[in-house]
Image 1 (cartoon, rainbow over the protein chains, first blue to last red):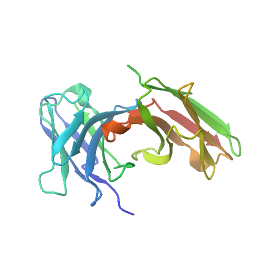
Image 2: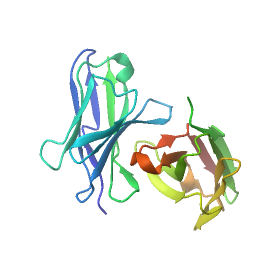
Image 3: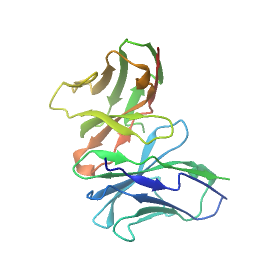
Length: 111
Length: 113
C-alpha cells in the first residue's frame, strides 16, 4: 500500500537553528500539506501546496516557515530559526482526489 | 477560535460496548466531515467520512451520524474491541480549501477487555 514517508523521525535542535523536515508524498498525488501537533493537543493545519506553489497557509505559518518541492518527489518544510514553541510532531500529508494520507510524523524537539 | 469542538476528551468502554464521540461545528461552509484514528507514534489515518447530503454512514462497526440543523456529528463504534483503543479526531473541511482540515481536540478511547 502506498504511503507517505517522513524523515527524520525525531530531531533535536537548539533554539535559533534551522531545521528541514522531509517528506516523500504518495507518487501520483498532487496536493501536499504540512500539519503539526503539539504534544497532547489537536492537529493543526500549517500549509497546503499545489502546482508548485502555496495554496493556503494558516496564521501559524509565518515568515520563519517555508516549503519547497525541490526535485519532484520530496516535499520539505524548513523552519529558519527555531523557537521553543516549535517543538511538536510535524505531519506531512498528500492527497489525490480528496482523502488526505498522513505520514508517521517527524518529532521536533527545540532546546 | 475553535471551529470544531469534540467531546469527551477521554472515554473508557468495556469490550463489546458502544463508544460514542461527539463533535460540533460552527462554520456552515464545511461540507466534508472525516474521522481520523491515531495510534501512538503514528499519523492520523482516515477511518470514515461523511458529506452533509446524508444523515448517516456506516462502514462495518463504525457509523457516523450527522445532524445538519444542529451542526453536530458523531462517531459510533459498535462492539468496541481493545484494538480500537486509540485517539480519535473529528475534522471538518470546506470544499474550496483543498484539504485544510479543522481538527477537534481528540478523544482518547480505551477499550477494556
